[in-house]
Length: 450
Image 1 (cartoon, rainbow, N blue to C red):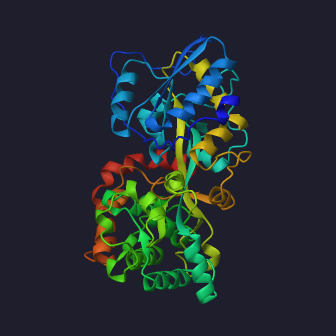
Image 2 (cartoon, rainbow, N blue to C red):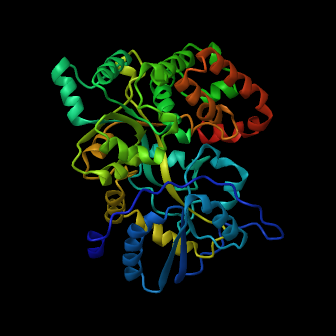
Image 3 (cartoon, helix red, strand yellow):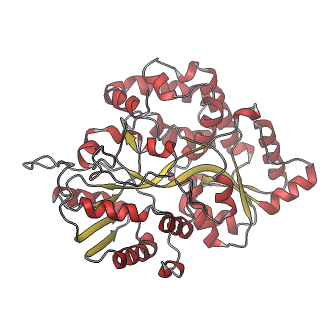
């Protein structure tokens, strides 16, 4: 793998779970077809062109070791990815494609389109799961069958600048906050020092990365599957003490009148936030996903940073799990006529040497216990348990996620939405939209193992 040592750094792959147009007048794809070809051309589709350099090197070495196999890697911007997949699936021309695991993995489209990666038949089994943590395999599986190969982990964390935290430690005698009160004390110190949290709120969805840490520390220790309680046992957000506490603390943190976030955060684009956190001398923290680490390192690798979990609970013993998800993965088209080639490539990709190179170049958290990345932030993250966030474990058609991002986040920031009104509206929307999402309940609970 000599060439792998000199490649230009790439960036992290973030793919989307996408709907696909239906095919008509065509026999249903079979998981048992397409295993005959042992040589030929394999196609790989991705949604991130900046991923090209790393994949180009991996592919180059794979082709050298596998004479007779040519790999075509095609990447387009995320906005164009759905159209690319639609056209390829309609033409039965999909081998390997980027696919982010999501709670709707069990829906009809994905079950029809994705090749099962696990099988009792050794010929059809993709031998890629050795040393991959079970929690990530489960997130990529439905009813015991894996349909997506997890490629990286994303965790929601608080990033901090070490020089600021050292100053805080020296001035106050305190340490990394372990409880909600300790966290607020740190933020009050930060504000008095003229600094703030960098937050790219213009894109709306980053609010989910903040909410997830409250759900993980306040709600999850008491309610292991909030969705199940809502869907099956009729839990009401406005009546549950843990969801009420979660939203009250969210509102306290977000309200701009408290002065914790950078001015005009709702007008600041998320794409600029990671780099700005590093280069802005007034930025002490940012609340983000671990996938932004590479952008931070690229902005200025000399700036020393660390991470901690936002401690939403007053009980330190419950502030222990980072909320996260499988941030990227690979799937194989069930209609592929090159399944044997896809199997060979993915087994090569998940070998420790190749996969280690992939993670190191992209600064992503490994899904394998045997692969670690030589970066202090990722090393720290690898030692902390990760749980799947509610936005990944909730049915896509359920209105909670959209309402949280589009209304609750901006409303709490601007001070125009009360906690009581937010909770009441969430309960109302869930009840009103039940015909849309209740159909998904059974498959979702199967996926969650409930």
